[in-house]
Length: 300
Image 1: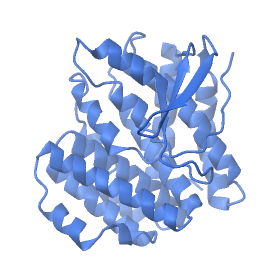
Image 2 (image 1 turned 120 degrees about the vertical axis):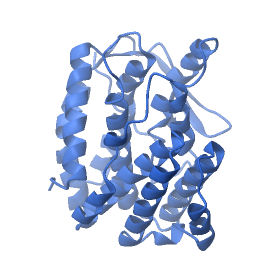
Image 3 (image 1 turned 90 degrees about the horizontal axis):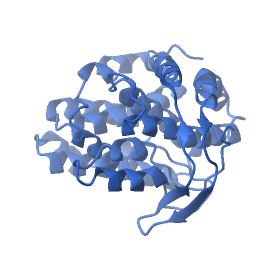
């Protein structure tokens, strides 16, 4: 039985499920896994016009606690690619890409790489009209970045929050949707390409499968805005990935939802999305192709 998308009226942190699933030591991993099995989306507002999917640095940091997953510089979008982004669609999509890369570098305490990503995010923010999120105080903090994990984490989180707040205040839902799409794609691309081999009992593999829920909701949001040509063409760009995710099935379909004090919408119940090795390889191949087309601006 295929799982159907359900609308959500929330800010969705696309990276939360995957990266948090890797946190914890061997003694508490099972408890944390059970908690993360329920977490699918994250919200701070209830206005259905707001649907945010920028990868959350707070959640990305948990990724590094899985020692089997290492930082791979070749997975991030080269900063030199910024010159390829001429049209608004490519700028907004890749603003999301670089935002995810920024959090990825910060999570692994790579201060030099983080600074480069901060710089290109800042540059693109001016190009898409959201440069105000980089205040003089924030720029001064950027210049004094160190390898201190807490400092990097706070910096990434502050930028993340500023972007969300600014776009919400300007009612720029189309921009937010494209940024979110680019960020989620980059996040998933990094994760699937960080897994050396398919193992059915690997928690990260299950989290990749669980991303179907977030992807279905992302596609729903795109479809709600498809009157915009950039959104419509983005839907076409994602069609191969949708086909790959549509092949996933669920073993059960009883769910319940609740909202925590932090605003996270938690989906629980007996539902489990099943992924085979063939499914994994197809999603990995497809997400890589779709993401690379976006980062080299080879999409219409």
